[in-house]
Length: 550
Image 1 (cartoon, one colour):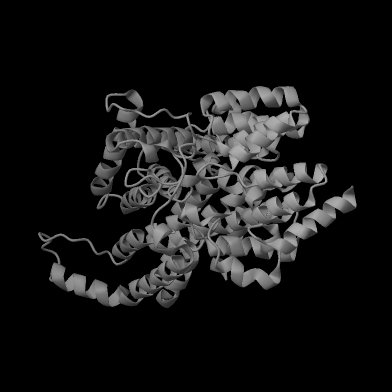
Image 2 (image 1 turned 90 degrees about the vertical axis):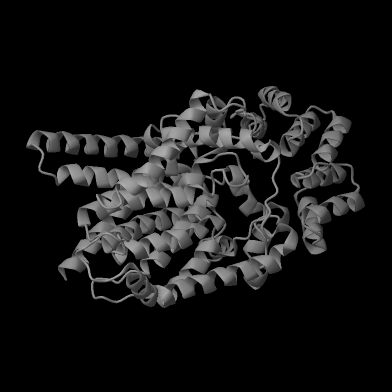
């Protein structure tokens, strides 16, 4: 009963913390990439189309992404909480709070330390770099991936009653992979979890034990074979579904533009050097989060063509230090070693070291891996507070910890407010990423929506100067020219926005609206069919709605 009460208190604490920090997002709108949800509302909000939702790529096949669980969660949102942004933000907040609680359960179960588990969960919840994943609705992919990954990893460990649910690990792993591909980090992390949980530490020179390393290995395999078999089945099931949806061409490949990730278009060494620099940027934003930004696209982070740059060297020594920490703390403080392992195994997938991903950088990308950092920090504080050092040092450590919690909570609360409206978000992005074509273009779009066409044109022309082949920016300039009465120039920009490798499909709707203004219904229908991916009924419904408004 006492244990149940403790768990309930921790669960309530997680919810109180999350709602205190992110409750203001409930008044927010659909912003930035959230618009993809609205653009697919006709599909996601239809109960009869659930099979279609589960067999769709995320959002286009060319992106090489398959996240059916995330898309299905949007469908549930539409069906049970309506099409308002409030319901979507509410689910994000609830899932984030539950993730904090799962972190507490997971850390306590593996390390048997209540204080360490509580502190890790609290630090994770208040970490400001998570604001993008929580306040931005599409950040749900990150939240769900870690949420189900924690369930999968926890299934490998016996609970207080000595019971485990290894057979369910594969189910949770499938759901995690179906939320976001980053969850594949579960496989190597699961080995570390099993290793630590089983106290399987290889030491050939250990004279205290009569059991050989080989015998330990056999015992280890016998204990965890069902869990890893379950994980393997979950992974195979996901890969099979992914292959059927994406096909051979996009099964492993990720296509992106130079705007999202210029590292895909540079030689090997400049990519590696820049990845080291970005590693340093991530660490600075984790520990000193006063310059958080929603955008790092072209050309905010210039390509590094030399190893001998301060940013590159900083990232290099961070990586070297982390690898050193794994071996140094393995016997001394296993929780620190595990935290480093968790971070590295998760971070390497989104770091651009192994292969270029869909984005050069993004704060939401380190959401999964940051759990490792939180565990490291919590371990350091727990070690100091429980050590035999003088009381004055413990008081100082506790005061510093309290200061960190307050500081991070305030920064997270403030940052959450930037995600309430697109104008606030894009204005902040233009300040922190003035050299990004995406940031300047988005701010121009925000001015356009406010009918401030002068500032809209100024920002959009600045974006075009940075990079003149960004489809959405080209489309937005077309909108400005349309409002200025330059219809032919606007039409030229709309068509140009559709001519790129990754066209902006909203330009189809703009061309349709221009045709409707001219009374040309056949041309409007043609463009709308393209906009709705060949759905003629949706095109006709759009035209009727337009005529009704007129």
